[in-house]
Length: 168
Image (cartoon, rainbow, N blue to C red; front, side, top):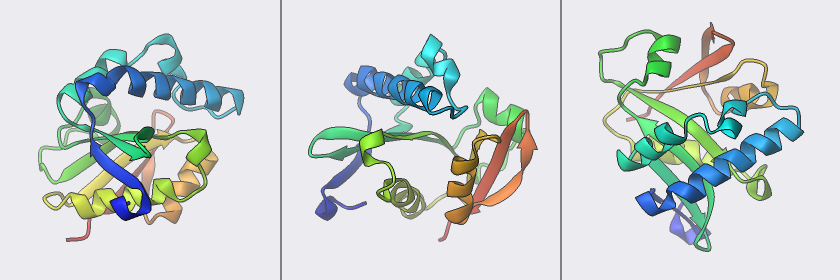
């Protein structure tokens, strides 16, 4: 995920908020139409404020190709209420939580997701574990994380939990 490939990763700015929220809702609708049970709550405006706050907190990143946002993801070293519900309280400060990794359909199945995961592992040097969750019934997404070296930890509240040691 380097500029030489025409991709640029950068922290999202406040003015990117509406584009990111619109993109996430379009993906949620796309998943619903493809009978993929993931992010349906976004269609009703659920998480709009949390998404904006992650951008304000400089935890949200965008991936640009020819100045167009083609992907987004959020990284947080602080547990959200959702993270605590799934993972239990973690006061070690050694974990990084990945949320809302999203790629527009035109760029799916082109290795962008894998490149983003590699970029996160190379970019983040002060954490030991990268943690994430996804709907347990979303077979393709579960397989994606397993194929990218994530360790399956278990299922809580219908969500698969994965983690990966970040190489130092």
